[in-house]
Length: 478
Length: 94
Image 1 (tube, each protein chain N blue to C red):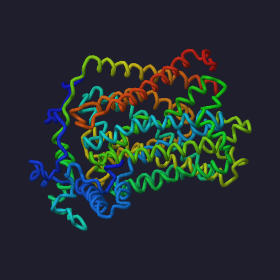
Image 2: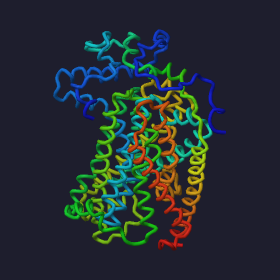
Image 3: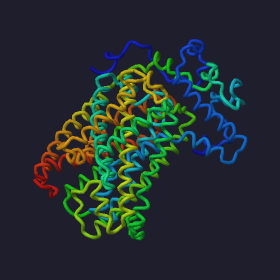
Image 4: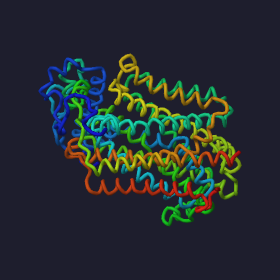
């Protein structure tokens, strides 16, 4: 069932190769005849990086910034993509129900956890030039590979549905009809991939993602008590009070707003598609750190923007996107509420692009068909079909009358947390595999951090399990 | 961040175009020349090379198998519990 029996009979790499160029390899003449459009586009991106490094060495000042500018992307996209509609709604719920307190430093902690995990995918992608799904299938076999894909497909599809719920709710604030909002989003997802170029796709999506910052002016308009914010960051006080079961679910949803399986698959595949190499790992780390920092600031801004609902005793337990914006209007004004609604719309649209791309990468890697945004449509139609098909299916479900949207919004982040420990186990096994990683295997502290994150997620999951089986134990409704 | 992003820090591997006579000082890359494309990519970064060379399977020890099975059972149980909790919430809401 496990291991070698299910493997394809292709030559296997038993040890990690050197970082020699393809031109220097013994197979160079043969490879030259087999070059694809994807290779040429990737080489163009690599030339830009090499050129920037060369110029940087001559100009000294700001040369490193140009290199960083060229190499950032996957890390920022993965974190701003994960600041998606259900995540922003989780943060909104944290602020509306508990105000300024425990959840502010807790959100920072979840992004530290996210950074620890995502940094490993940068190394895996840059060293192996393989996506996450491909590596799991190659190293652990089809049996474990399909389990892993099952978790990813279920989680991604449910999350995609919630992104379109967010889009619908965000634009609903402006009176835009659901079919126009959802259909328009689908057109934007399709437009982003028609470029046939990873670089262009990445920059378009980054430009959209930066609008996640709309929550900052919304937070400023809420006039938060900065002293209380500083105090909360240092002391984690006040702790949330009330129904312990609901608090536990919110804690789980908040973790699930930052650490989820699709992020592992997406960032590693994007690093590969971008053509990053081992020497780019430091820039990849910087990219991931910038993404985590930006996303945590925007997440905290969301909590601050909805904190007035807590201070004025508004019951936000049943709120979704548009309801939050409408309820906030008396305290942050129409402009603030409109920014908040636009932020939810933006969160949905960027995540819809990133998550559908993550599914398409994984399918392409498993089916061993073309799976690069550098490929033209005709060369990689199964890849693009998966990408658009998954988005279209999720969009259609959101438009169906009586579809249990509430059911999905309630569960999607919790499912993400519960599915994470096996994904982390595969990640840690891969990143400690010297045959795969060579000298870039995890160090002791990276392993301690990775195992700690995994154990924390398991403990949170077990806590949720106990509270579900024995609801009265934590004061839940039995 | 320091060394790799520092433009004054020389490439440790010397494997990219920076030291390649084909592209080293070019203003624009001549990517119609396959040699230049190959000089910019690592050996296992070329699609054709990746397709023919795959990582082989690793031997899973008993401990690793037990851990993977344990985590799989954990996920299945948790998904059942999620279903129970959602059904309960929906039931209460109606």
